[in-house]
Length: 143
Image 1 (cartoon, rainbow, N blue to C red):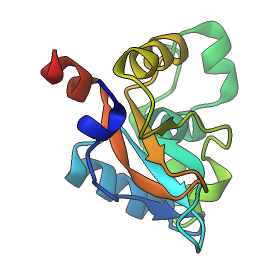
Image 2: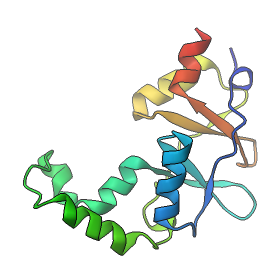
Image 3: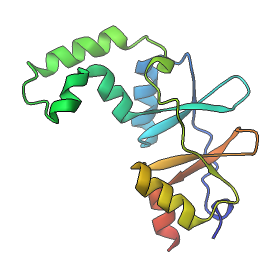
C-alpha cells in the first residue's frame, strides 16, 4: 500500500516565527505529538515536537544523566517556560526532517518510523510542500 492511500490530509503546521506557547496550545488541542514547521511557501523546514520543547526547558545534561530526579522543582520549569514562551519555534525545532512521499510504501514508512523513533511523519510533494501527515496509528489501522 502507498502513502497516498492512508495519508491524513491534515495541514496542521506552524511557521518559524510562531511563539513556543502557541505551539504548546496547538499540540495540546490537536492531540498530535509534533507539528511540521513550514516557510512562507508551505515547504517543510523543520518539525517541532513535545520532546524538543521539553529539551528546551530542561538542561542538556539531564539527557546525559538520563534522569531529572535532581531537578529542584516544577516551579523552575514553569519559570523557564515563561522565559521562552514568546521565543520563535525556529530556535527549538528539529531542522533535519524525515519526510514521507505519496509514492512511498507503508513498509518503507514503518521502517523509517521505527529506525528514527518517530510517531509521525510529514508527507510532502516533490517540491517539499506539506501535503499531510502519517501517524503510526494510521499504519496500524490499515493492517
